[in-house]
Amino acid sequence: MAYQFSFEPVFANWGLLVQGAALTLVLTAVSAAVGLAVGILGAVSRQWRLPILCQVFTAYVECIRNTPFLVQLYFIYFSLPALGMRLNGWEASVLAMVLNLGAYSTEIIRAGVASVPRGLIEAAESLAMSRWQCLFHVVLRPALKNVWPALCSQIVIVMLGSSVCSQIAAEELTFEANLIQSRTFRAFEVYLVSTGMYLLLAVGVRRCLHFFGRHYICRGRA
Amino acid sequence: MQKKAHRFDLVLVFMLLAAVFLGISNVQAADNALSAIKKSGVLAVAVPQDFPPFGSVGLDMQPVGYDIDMATLIAKSLGVKVRLVPVTSTNRIPYLTTGKVQLVISSLGKNAEREKTIDFSSAYAPFFNGVFGPKDLKANGAEDLAGKTIAVTRGAVEDMELTKIAPPTAEIRRFEDNSSTIAAYLSGQVQLVATGNVVAASINGQNPEKRLEVKFLIKNSPCYIGLNKEQPELLKAVNGIIAQAKADGGLEALSQKWLHTSLPQNF
Image 1 (cartoon, chains in turn cyan, brown):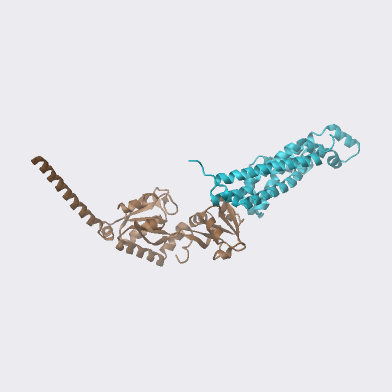
Image 2: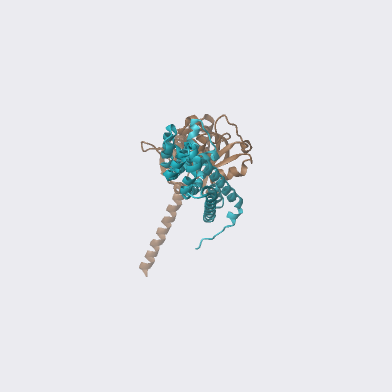
């Protein structure tokens, strides 16, 4: 007996799915912006071995990269209240995703910074630029340009990982898909549609990042 | 010719004897079950072994639980010994109807289908889905949920009912499974939680400092004792024992011991 497809219940709840997708994008945008900032700070701390920050960031990177994202999320949502810090579903999701992206992008950007040709830095030093001036004007752009594809992939991975945040009742796309499934019991149709939506979101985000990279990061030679 | 007739006579005699025996045994079954119990001095009761806190196997391999205590109480009130017969959800009613036991005390719910086959006593144990919360939070009905956060397991009976009756300003947080729902309440992420009273009982047993008090019921399906039909004396006796236990606090003591909470009001 062939399975009877019935997409009407799914499309009747179209608004919920679009709402979930929009909130997934918001989560990703905020996490990407803050996570990249954290990553740049961490990469610089580790590469230049700044006194306290280097140890702090090393410990942070090792912790986050060697534990599962779901466990980090549960720790922030369920365990932190016992220490007095109560974050709701949204705040916990954003914090977890920022920490996650920050750790992975620290290592990626550090690789980029290390790959900048030594000659460029020596040229900057010979122009009496301070270390921070050298960073902002000379090192950062080529570093990011070298690792931009890897950074884009990491951001998309974190966006897809946001589906895990449905476990703490953050109402993003996976949560809405699960909700519709539990009301209409059309699991195949619901998850097919939400998979398609994640695919479109991922392709779209990648295109946007590629465009951003080409026009703001990878300008000019070297 | 004579042999054939002789055999036919034998068959007739056997059929007659069978009819007489059946008739006698029927008369015996229609005998008063209550007096039969008192005469034999043993009350056979079907109890669960796989459903704590109503019935499970203790460390000494003896059955323990709310239903076992209820069975012992009834036998004591009737002045007889109790014989506990472990059953499962599928065979508990057949054991009753075939006479292997006289009572079924196995967290039995009442529905029209079962009413056709067996009789039910009055309710002896609460079994409900409700909204629970800390002692100092007042919430006597669905309208009191306005502006409060409440955790519920997505897709469960409580989820469906609560979505229907909760006011629009109530924040319902739906979690994927029972344990996340409970963890959300225990970690203080939500103020109230909607779940079943058996789950609440096990939490209260493990976390006495974060007691769950029942605020109001969402769906009530209390447990009844099952008896065979046409046993009015036994039914009256059992109902009398339950009423007596309610009046003198015996039922409340059972509820505290096994469900770690009071009986709901108007039980």
